[in-house]
Each structure stands twice: as C-alpha cells, then as structure tokens.
Length: 202
Ligand code: OGA
Ligand code: MN
Image 1 (spheres, helix red, strand yellow):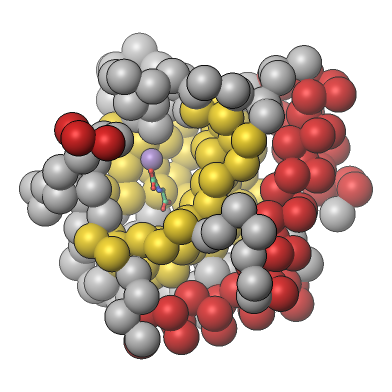
Image 2 (cartoon, helix red, strand yellow; image 1 turned 180 degrees about the horizontal axis):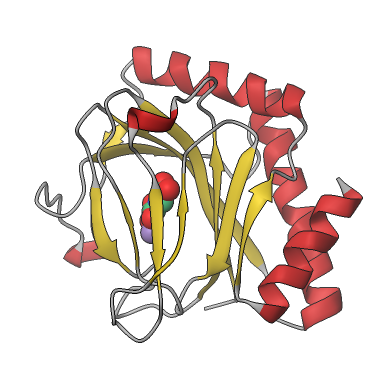
C-alpha cells in the first residue's frame, strides 16, 4: 500500500492524474465487489442525480448510473476499511502536497449494460470543495471488448484523450476534480465501482 500511495501522489503532483494499481488490497477489492453486488441485488442504490441540494435532478440524458453513499462511520467491515484507506491517502496528500483536503466521501456506483455518464467535470457550480476524484473499479475478469471505459480528456476542451481506463478490479483512477473533463462509456455488462472525492472544508 505504501509504494502505491507514493506513486499516486507523485503522479497527481506531476500530471494531475493517476491510473494504476489500487491502494486497496486484492482481498479488500474482492470484499467490496461482493458487497456492491449484494447492495444492488437488494435494491439499495438510488438513481443518480446531477448537482446538489434543491438543484439536484435525475437526468437520464447525462448519466444512467445508480449510487449509494457510504456512511461516515460504515458498519460493514469492508466499507470501513476502504474509507480508512482513503483517509490515509488524504492525510499523505496533505503532508506532501499541502492540498488541505479535510473530508472524504465515497459511493458505490452501478451501471447497467448500456448505461453511461456523459462528459462532465466533478465540480458543482455552487460548490468547489471537491479537490481529488477517486474511482476504485470492482469488476473481475473485465474483457477488453466490454467497453465501460473511463475516458479522461485534456483541460483545454480540445477533446484530446489523456487516458482511457477499463474498469477492471484492482485498478484505481484518481485525478484533480476541476482539471479533467471525463466520461464513462457504455459497457456490454454490469459495471461496479466505489467512487469518491477528497474535499476541502466548505
Ligand atoms: C463520476 C464519474 C467515473 C467512473 O461518478 O463522477 O465520473 O469511471 N465516474 O465511474
Ligand atoms: Mn465524474
């Protein structure tokens, strides 16, 4: 975990993004993958919304995933461990890059086959507290031709692709929330992730 964390920090500092091995162990990723599948089966996820508070609206033209926020102190052991690992990364980021991120929020996300999330940035017009976006993929044996990639684009709105990430278990993606427009392409199978943000205080 230590070595991976240092890679994430180095990459965020130089390029503003990281894609590679997850800070979660294989065992934790497998537990989260099982947990996500059970939550989806039990109907615990909600149709995802766009924006915050009163402005939040479900908009199926923009995004078609369903999500479930983790509690601040999760009861489930894997969720608690995941949040602890994210807080450890948060602390290390503050120590090395002085980014001043005080909070972490995480949600499970599930995309049905064909579901997508159109190009967007992870900052709300009315809330600029999100500093770092994190995505932990939870899909074992994801075939190359299954789609569902996360596509990161250059900040200049030229449409230049920075990287394209298959949502394979054991991979994490991480980027500065205000810098990279990005989208989720439709997949031929169900797509699970744990997605989150490091935030500075409001
Ligand atoms: C998001 C998002 C990317 C992904 O939830 O805001 O962009 O790969 N997710 O799931
Ligand atoms: Mn996003």
